[in-house]
Image (cartoon, rainbow, N blue to C red; front, side, top):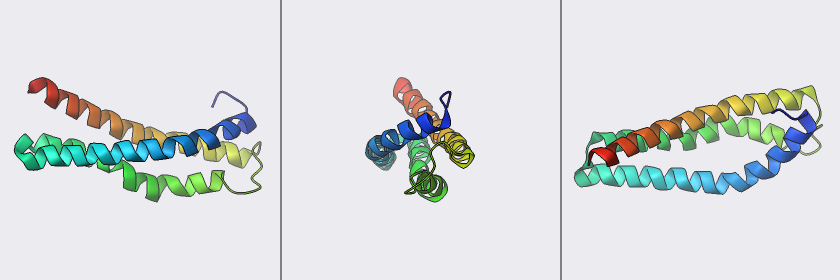
Length: 115
């Protein structure tokens, strides 16, 4: 976001498209692994970690996707003030996902270190 709006929007689009599959896959695998550990008797903390990372997926679909779709609209003026506002909004929403992922990592690492 330190770049001018047009450059930031131009870089965001392909980065977003590349990251989507990887991030969604990792979140789902992490959710399934945490849930499996809990089901196998690993304790409620594994379920907590699974739920935290699992929240990333619906949060993305319900809260972030409308912003993504607006940023990817055909014919969008990439240097407009509206594009800048959308990029700044996306940045804040992505921070929520990052915090959920960090919280999950802390829970999982704490569980692994206590084993």
